[in-house]
Length: 166
Image (tube, rainbow, N blue to C red):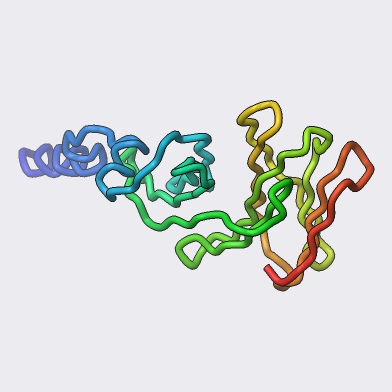
């Protein structure tokens, strides 16, 4: 009986992290020596992974964190680059696992961004920063090839269109 109680206590301690304190996104970034000016958004990818959007020296950057059992650990990161200054788009594979389209839009007319790959159309999540500057991202289920079209719309009307190999 005593062995059963001790075994249950060990299993319970292992499942709760042996009393380890929660490690936040900010603490994980500091531990990995990631410089940032401001964290803009944290998005849950699944139960154990988070995507963090942050600004560093006026650049949009993103990171991928493993956050199992409330202990976050930095895995990978990338800087967004490409575009006209009014709109931008990049394609990344975070930690060789998660495909993501990411960019910036500075035209106040744009209220929707769509990524079109093959037959699939994905509507972006837009992160407001100021009245004029917003970041956007799309995590496609299964991208249908690398050639994509990204459209920036005002309601149903296309305002800008970017095409290319992403």
